[in-house]
Length: 141
Image (cartoon, rainbow, N blue to C red; front, side):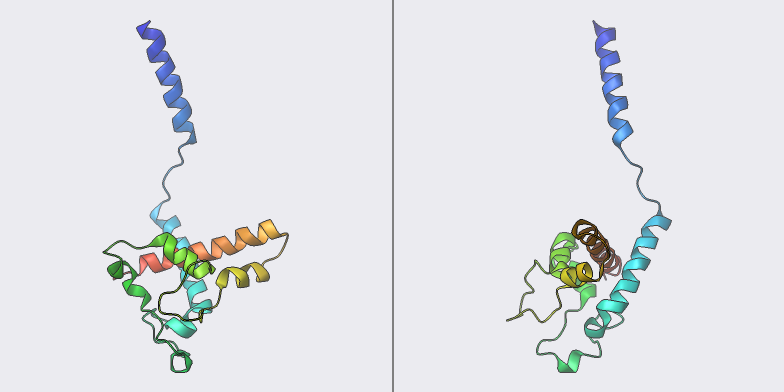
């Protein structure tokens, strides 16, 4: 009885571990962060500044000061609000302090610029947004 139970547990453990993916290496993580930085510089820096501190070249023309994106974790009790930031960039999240949504809805823009069918466009947009959010998480002070 004990042997069959142990054998069953071993098989279950082996099956479970076959589904576990190894953690990404630091080099892989930095590739995603670097892609996010490029996307940020292309899409976000005009308002939030190249250093993400809220001083982009469009700042004088905006009704509200853009957020210092390096302090998002500080403003959230020390934990980076990953999915909240994702929703804001994508366009589903509300940007506090905005009467109307001054920030572009990047999810729509990224999907519109993607090639292929709607599902492929959604996947491409999600990847671009995720890379920006990983970059923002990386630069927190």
